Length: 209
Image (tube, rainbow, N blue to C red):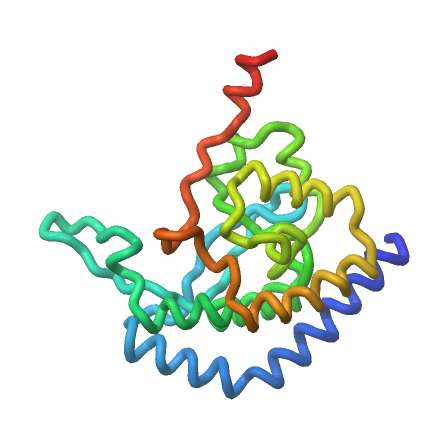
């Protein structure tokens, strides 16, 4: 293990453990509020690909209800996201349970955001290099636009991080993240409450070759 990876893991353990202790009261209150306003389960668990595409369980506080139409189908995200859910996303309180995932080693504080497992076969070989490092709670794409970026921009920034990651860069990203969280910038693209589906660029790239 390189000195950088050892230092990065040490930082992950120290910071995530400390923040879990410091934010324990906030997480408890948030969990109670989620249960009251949004229902059960309090935590949203979703499989995500991590380092070398190994699948792990990503944790978040839920931000949407289970509202369904007359046919029993889930309503659109826009209709299920309440004002309380918007508040959780804007303040990034919904991300706090991921500190446990960082402590366990499936995620890092800094790295490309873990995306849907179903996206794996849709990546180009270049885009798939984002899995050469552990996914993070925050990352280079998050401090350079977050969800306001389109998919191509996000993947370019993710791969740039893979090629340039260092302890100094990680500290810079963590520092910039504080400002992004406080300003609540880039939480979603205008008129949207969640990311567009990523359908892949591999097919279009192949057609141009």
